[in-house]
Amino acid sequence: MRLLIDSTRAAEEELNAREQTSSELREDAARSSHPSPNPSPLLEQAGVNMLSRAARPAFRTGAAVALRPAAASAPIVQSSNYATLREIEGRLKSIRNIEKITKTMKIVASTKLTRAQRAMNESRTYGQTSNTVFDEAETKPLEGEGKKTLLVICSSDKGLCGGIHSGLTRAVRRLMNEKPADYELVILGEKCKAQLSRGNAKDIALTFSNIGKGIPSFADAQAVADQISLLPTDYAEVKIMYNKFVNAQSYEATVIPAFSEEAIAASPNFSSFEVDEEALANLREYSLANSLYWALAEGHACEQSARRNAMDNASKNAGDMISKYQILFNRTRQAVITGELVEIITGAAASES
Amino acid sequence: MAFAWKAAGITYNRYLAVAARVVRRSLKEDKRLVAERRGEMDLRFAKWENGKQGEAKNLASANEQAMAQQAGQQQ
Image (cartoon, rainbow over all chains, first blue to last red; front, side, top):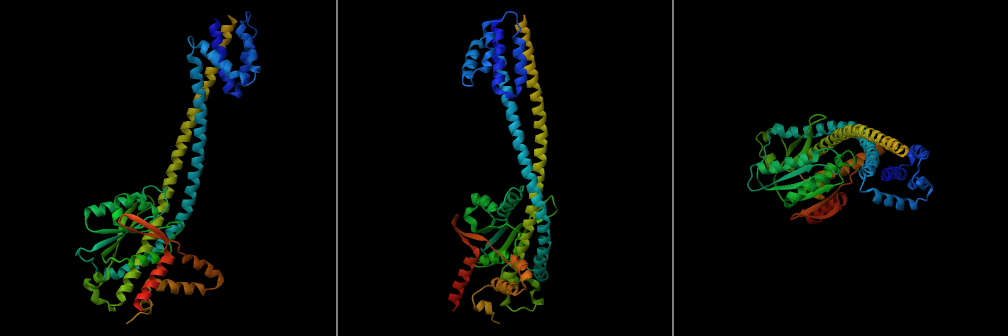
């Protein structure tokens, strides 16, 4: 009997020390244990509640050691329940915060998306109009002759937008595997640079960063095109890879070709244009800038749209987790309260007998 | 036919950028502020050699330097 009382006492002490809010229950317990007809010396230690905080742990450990052989399991389960309850609460809070952040990012991406889409539609006109010339002239890239192909990859600096950057990287790798040739890479944006520098660092010629802060401007495209045309190597073909905006859900890594001067001059229908030979270099540079602008703007719109979707999904997942954890939290809390009540009742019953 | 910008050692794109900047600057105040935002360019770039990234440089100043060098060579 003494041991049993001892164990319930100890359990109560656990409760007291951990949960200040259960003070009413504690008082109930103290009251119910006092009117016992034959108070054991240990029961007098109800006064331990008034002991100083520092003295308490010593008592608790002493009690825990004393009751270990008998009903030791009860307080241990108790304490772990309390810990998980607090853990669940903490996790719930952090998920709520994450949900807030992702929701805000989604809203930001949505507002940026409309502007990015407008810029994309405008830039598409630039790119397609300047490529009409090559369509009409039926320009084909020149066949090999051991010349290198230049791949310009249009990604951006920012992440948190699903898999569009890695999709682009995968497309680049696939292209390099399917048509093995000498490739050199010009990478726009940090994300694809980080991914491609792992496997293809040798092929990289230039990387550009600071892309994707805002909507790409034509000045950006011109500066990049200038730097590309300043590269010392003579390329058979320049391929610009970007994410094509199919619809708001899907993007496709696509190639825009840009041609060298010889390729333009060798195109079958070239004679239908009356162009000075010398103007071709200018045409090449200018059409490269146009295509780059198109690719950058469309890639930017894809990125915003992908970010919106990713953040939408993240918010949804966070909502799911919150409801799951809320249920778990309530259930655990209920279980803890039930457990406490059971202990109090058994304690009271035991001390009365 | 010789091109003036080729003679000066700058590319066609650079020539267009300069011309566009002049047009933007000659606009009226309110329109100029909107238009000049379209001409902003703040890219950085790095040259890679043998799988190693070189020093990251500002693209605008690097372009200007390269053009100046070319102009020097042609004279």
